[in-house]
Image 1 (cartoon, one colour):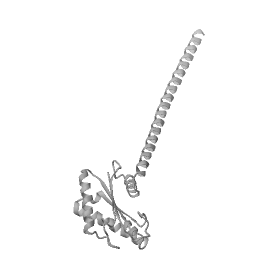
Image 2 (spheres, rainbow, N blue to C red):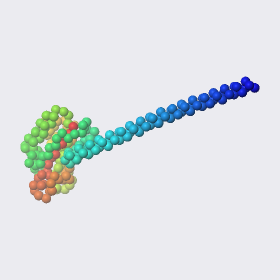
Image 3 (cartoon, one colour):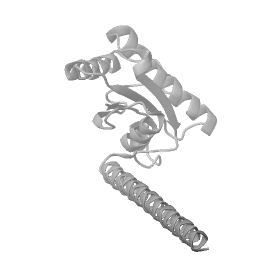
Image 4 (cartoon, helix red, strand yellow):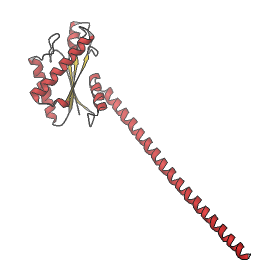
Length: 204
């Protein structure tokens, strides 16, 4: 009888010890999981803060740029074209520099000289850049006509820079704003002439 009682006591003790060990292991595992969860939460929070800071920096940078440059930079960043996301320089050519005849996309000799200067600036950078060429028109004619004319003028500039100066076509894009982004009101002849322009934005 005494032997049976002793065995039962030993067994009970072993079960209790095993239960304590099991509970201790479970508690330790829970603590480890909670620590990992806290680390992940902290990591996500840090990433969110970094993204918010990057967005604030981008917004501040865009505020300091012209409409044309900021739009070009935003498109390039969304497309993942740029590594650094910076505007190197911007050149706007109104008709006194890049002259187009009314309703024409053909480059004049003066326009070619002006574009030669741009190509020289690009070569002087001696590093890969991306160029967006924007075509703008005045409000004369229909909206569709002006949209197509702006595109034709931007494409004329792109072809010239590629054929004459060897700038890769893959490093240039074109977009037409047509009459939608006038630099000045179209109410005067001089204003309309200023709005018939090409804007070149060089980014890296």
